[in-house]
Length: 254
Image 1 (tube, rainbow, N blue to C red):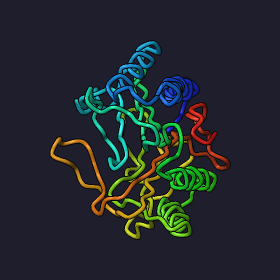
Image 2 (cartoon, helix red, strand yellow; image 1 turned 180 degrees about the horizontal axis):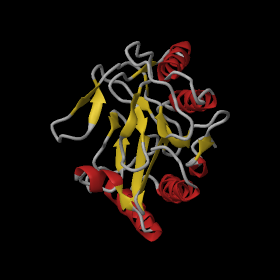
Image 3 (cartoon, rainbow, N blue to C red; image 1 turned 90 degrees about the horizontal axis):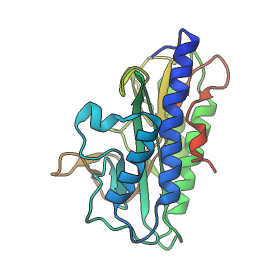
Image 4 (tube, rainbow, N blue to C red; image 1 turned 120 degrees about the vertical axis):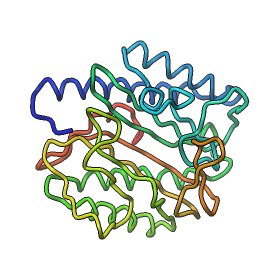
């Protein structure tokens, strides 16, 4: 969406506060021994307290309120009573929601407890790449140039990017114009970021895979060549200078 009135910005800030606080509290609540379903219920309660509704549940009938992916699962992991979290797990939580007609989206990967499986380097790379990408976004910059930056930064660190997962426009629905915001230089995308538009910028940084495939459950995605992936995401408003990061309170850069 494009912000044209102050009340629209206020609405986006409130929706973004709901998803950002939910993500942060879920990350703090996660501990070895609990199930991903317990973690999802915890997040659902926080969203409900804000008066927000889960976006994947509302828009797509997703079988959960948040997406929780563990280890080799890249994204869209279904919360389960049978998936018990363990020390050293690589966990990704993606929280998106609707509040009073406004939609916001954020996510982040983290290691649960001690980094016994050496995932932190991947996570730090993803965080840094998101920070650098957002720092370079302003009105008139080509979307493909930001994708090129993200892939270049990933390659510098020995990683790859997932080419069929992208950021996107957001605001009045979960996915809207300007469409795909890829993590690589899409030479066919000549679209530029426009002032006052709301977009969800997200990284998909991988150890070995370049595409994500959907499992038989119809939701969970894994790498076409295996490995691990880290994702970090903020919803922002594009300006002529530094973007306004609406979900900054989620603390994923801390």
